[in-house]
Amino acid sequence: MMLLAVTACAGQQEDVGFGGQPPAPAPAAPVQPKPEQERTPVPDDLIKAAEQSGKTPRVWTQDGGSVVVTNGQEGGCSKVHAEVAEQDAQQVKVVLVNETPEPPGICTMDLRYPPVAVQLDAPLDQRTVVLEERDVKVPPR
Image (cartoon, rainbow, N blue to C red; front, side):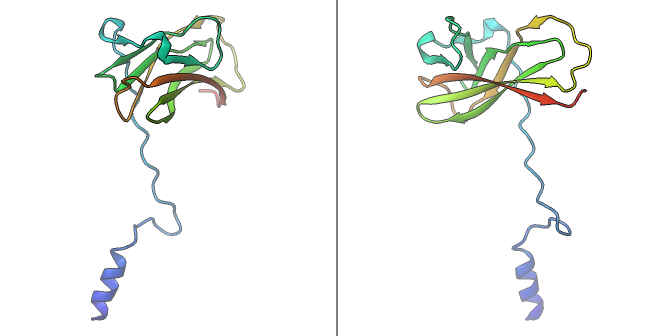
């Protein structure tokens, strides 16, 4: 009877080692943007950019609307990627994260506008895409 009680209790706890934390979930693999001719443009009235430059950014969907694609901006030593900050029935908030090494070292003075993509939980449909930007410092590569 004692053996049955011990094995029942043992099955209820996850094995995390001696005082360790459970393993973190693996990050989702980055989504690769498809060529522009394989994407569907999102109408301008469904796009909001946090920093308005007077020009609406270009945004597309791919894979049946379940992936949102836009162009980021990077230059010199910086790299850009996109993250979904939040999504609900009305909108999807996408953050363009610009990672710059600290200390920067020697960098070129060029600008690039690579396409970046994020996977949504459900197709975009008529939800608004809200674009935001965030700069972060990272250790040199």
